[in-house]
Amino acid sequence: MSGSLTVVGTGFLVAGQITPESLACMRGAERLLYLVAEPATKHWLEAECPGAESMHDAFWEGRSRLEAYEEVVERILAPVRAGRQVCAAFYGHPGVFVHPSHEAVRRARAEGFTAFMLPGVSAEDCLFADLGVDPALHGCQSFEASDFVVRRRRVDPRAALVLWQIGALGVTTYSVAPLWNAPGLALLVEALSEIYPAAHEVVVYEAALYPVCEPLVQRVPLADIGRAKVSTYSTLYVPPARQASVDEGMRSRLGLGVAEAEPS
Amino acid sequence: MGSKSAAAFISKLSTDPAYRDRYRKDPDGVMKEAGLTDEDKAVLKSGDPDKIRQHLGDDSPPGCFILFV
Image 1 (cartoon, helix red, strand yellow):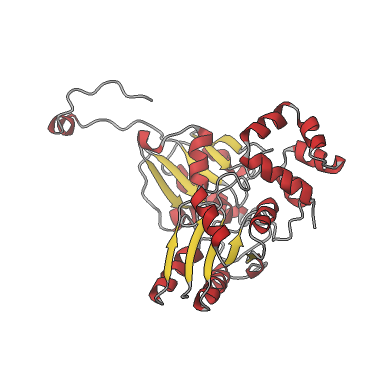
Image 2 (image 1 turned 45 degrees about the vertical axis):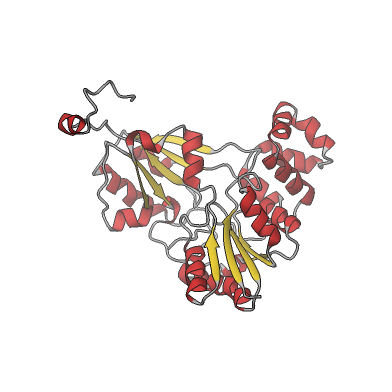
C-alpha cells in the first residue's frame, strides 16, 4: 500500500476542539506525529493513539526555526515514503500560521502521495468567540506582527486588525523564554501609533489552554501594550477606530436603497 | 513525569460541558470524586496555565511552538 498524509489540527483546550473527522483520521493512522502546545494534549493524544510521536525535540534554544521546520517536514514524510498511512497533528488550525504542515502536504503531493489537510480551530477563531466580535461586521485584517512592522503594511483603521505572534517580533530562532523580544513590542506600538490614537483601546489576547482557565483578555490603551503580559501565545486585536462611510452611489447602483443606521 | 490523573481529568473536562459545569459549581467535590491529589487540586484551582503546564510535567520547551516564519 502506498503512503499517505493527513494533517489535522487539535485546536486549543486539550481534546475539546478537535473535529470528529480529524479524530477519526488520527485514530485510523498507522503513524501519528504531533506538535502540541502543552502536556495535557500530549497525554490525551498518546492515550488515543498509542505510539504517537512528539516532534518537540526538533526545537531547542537558539535553533533556527526554519531549520526546525525542515526537520519536522522530513520526519513527517519519512514514514509516508515508507508506505505508511500518516497523520500529523498540530495545535490550533494546522494551516493557519503553521509552515511545516503546508510544506509537508506540498512535498508529499509532489512526490505522488495522497496528502490533504483538515481544518481546525485557530487562535483567531477563539478570539472572535471570546471577545464577541464578528469579522464580518466591519471587516478584519490579519497579519503576522513582524511582517506588519517590516513591510509597513497599510491597514484600514475602519476595519478590525489582528496581529499574530506579537511576542516574537523579529525573532527567527526558537527560544524557551515566554516573551522573545520585548523591544520589538515598542516598535510595534510605534508603527500602530502612526495609524491609531495612542489612547485607542486594544486587546492582548490568549486563548484558554485549559478548561479550568479563562482566556487572557487584557484591554489596554495602544500606548500601554508594553505594560500588558505578552507571551508567544499572545495575539493583538485592534478594534476599528471609526466607522466606514457608505458610498450612496454604490448603494444605489446595487439597488440597496437608502442606508439605514448601521450597528456600531 | 507529571500528574497523569490531572491530565486525564482536564481532558475529560475539555470534552464534557456538563462535567465542566459540575466542576465550576463544585470544584472540590468533583476533583475529590476524580481521585486527584491535594496538590492537583490546588494547582487546577489556581487557574494559572503556567502552573498547570508545569504540574502536568511539561517536558517540551516552555516557550510556545511558533510554527510560522
